[in-house]
Length: 186
Image (cartoon, rainbow, N blue to C red; front, side):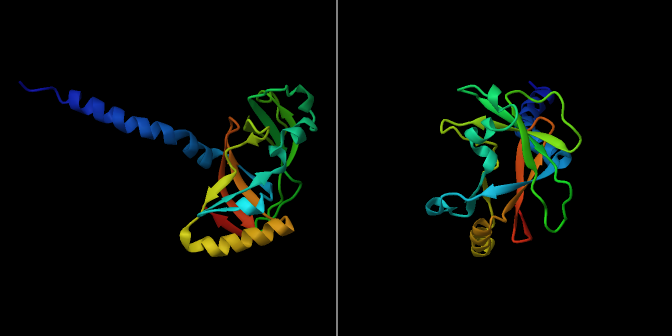
């Protein structure tokens, strides 16, 4: 008895479609998202390095800081997610980008965004911080010493800037870091 070819092809296509569907949203964000630059904050120096990765934080990762922004009074005691509206700087240089600034916050996706604004989605953690999914990045082993030194110096000078792509839904993907005027892409 000969089986029809579609009985073999259909399960194979299904197995290929599952991993491809997981990569669709991040790929769309990288291709069509808005590039945003964010000022990073120092992280506890005793837990600063983790193998070939780096952990960074942002001023607007603190829930208390978000409550001080316009719209922050609407954040309840146990919010699950928040949307931070970021405004583009007046001017920026391609070799020395200027960070975007948080201007307001909401627990729902904002209905209206002005020109030069974008909403970034974050999830509130049990530590009362907001995780945007852009706090840790990995870099090549060959660049470990160079990047670690540049990160330490940039954090002391408060010049480390994260390059992030933000999609229309508010999801963010970390693209790289600017350390002392030099871009590191990952």
